[in-house]
Image 1 (tube, one colour):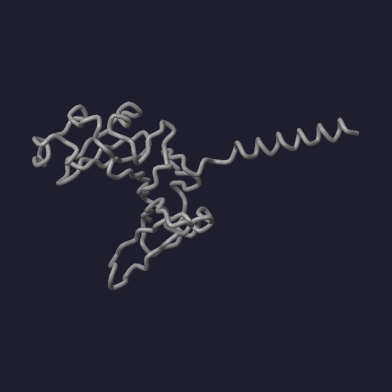
Image 2: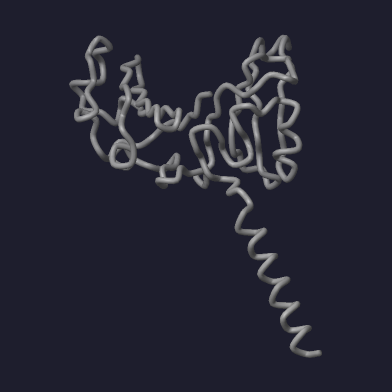
Amino acid sequence: MNKTLFVALIGALMLTNCATDNAPDPFLVKKNNIGLLTDSTQVKELDAIFSNDSVVRYIPGSDFIGSVNTIEVYEKGGKKLLDLSPRNASDSTSVISSVHIIDERYKTDKDITSLSTFKDIKAAYKISKVDNLINLVVVTVNDINASFTIDKKELPASMRFDMDMSIDPLQIPEKAKIKYFMIHW
């Protein structure tokens, strides 16, 4: 009798552990998903996906915010996690087109976070493109549909003011910090 009870208890523990191991990591960033959020997630599904968090939507057409359609996700404690941009501002069936990752717990399978440096990105992924903007450099990584924005203050002075300059990834200092980490679908 005791052996049967012991075997049943061990079996139940193993099943519980297996179920826990198969649960998706809510902070894992991949090419087509971020935790439970996917490239086909509709705006109306956000409350269920982030049921333990706060989802803040702005009402398009307000006199004060104009056509802003960013949806913000906060932890219950108030820490901001993500900014989500749907394809269509006031359509609940619209899918998310881009995600601005704010919380440093979100990371790729190669441990890239919003706290990573250019050196980390370059070591983990193939750089697809570098865009030279007014005050920023945008580094695109097609492998994960991501863009990493670096403030030009992180670049040598000779590269900060010439918008026509073509910037090669080799010219970006390895210690340059990420200002914004975005996923685009």
